[in-house]
Image (cartoon, rainbow, N blue to C red; front, side):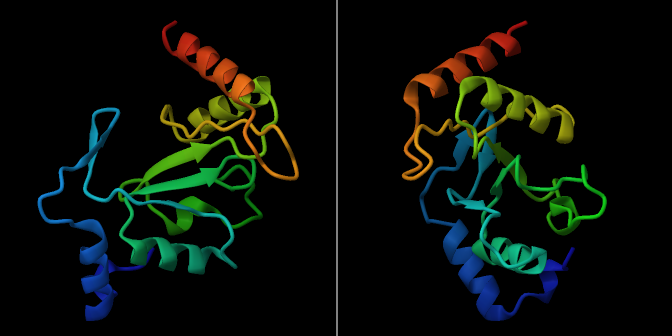
Length: 153
């Protein structure tokens, strides 16, 4: 984990400009308030150091990650996202990227809940086409209905 006091003055100015919009109300999701409306993903960076640097510089408070592709400690021989981004500083938003049916999406959400100690906020997406990555709306709705039903029991 890097020390935020190590930011350059330019980084601090950019961070403040991206996170604080004068007169803007906080973003509220599931009862939690966020000063930044920017959600940043963890994919496509060359390594964990670049991931950390990009997310810290962005000023985002919500970090989304693909449960199926991101190590949160389940593989001890691979870099762990939690080693570079602290859950006390960021709200992690697991997503179901790579799921092509409701059953897999629901299972992936349950895995994320276990990996994040009961965390129940997710970015639900069920894909319909492997080439275009267009969503499968019917399967996404099925998955959402199942997750809501599971949460009420």
